[in-house]
Length: 286
Image (cartoon, rainbow, N blue to C red):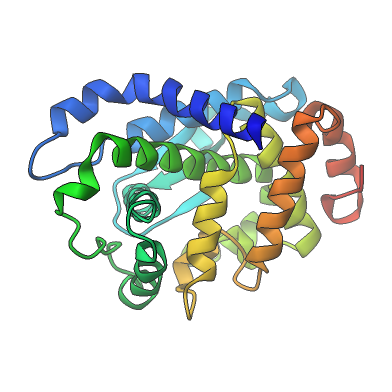
């Protein structure tokens, strides 16, 4: 717990140093979030840099490709014009907006308990194929204090880091190559509609270790999965984040186990990658 808190504070401080100028420029009555597609690109590049050379193979050092669309989408892709390193992760403006709103609701929950659960329920009702709705009464000055926004930024970075790392893992674990034909048959479909449970588990494990190597803790990812789990009915876009039938409470428990094992020194991505790629379905016990 102490180590997790230390890591979380370190992450918040490191990313806040990057974000303070942008936040100062946008700290106006319109309350524009400082975290944008540019920040997504920075986090994706940092995740790539911490990967083992075996995992980096075929992945472009500019690991994130961006798309200015309102639909929340994050997906592994291959770009034909990138030659020897065509693999990237596509992230839409709508996905960044979604994470900003969820991260903000989670941060507000610290000062107004129950706010986060209410927002998750509203999100499920109002966001099917539409822009993510803002939380209720979001212009309340209490929700935009420095302390709340520091929490919001930290949660956003951790949510974006884990989801980007999961999608990067689909490249180096071979999932994208296996399912690309089905994903691209007509309208883009989430890879999570096709991968096997063991393959998903392998991706989550690899992503957690990649994120931790990049000093990104799992607390934000757990909040994101908690938000989806709180939805009475999961909208289709949640398939870009996790398979629709995933037990998200169990997933969050597993993330805690990975983080604990990581800090005890017994779990590292460079040591786990062979078992993750060689086992049937992509996963083997350590």
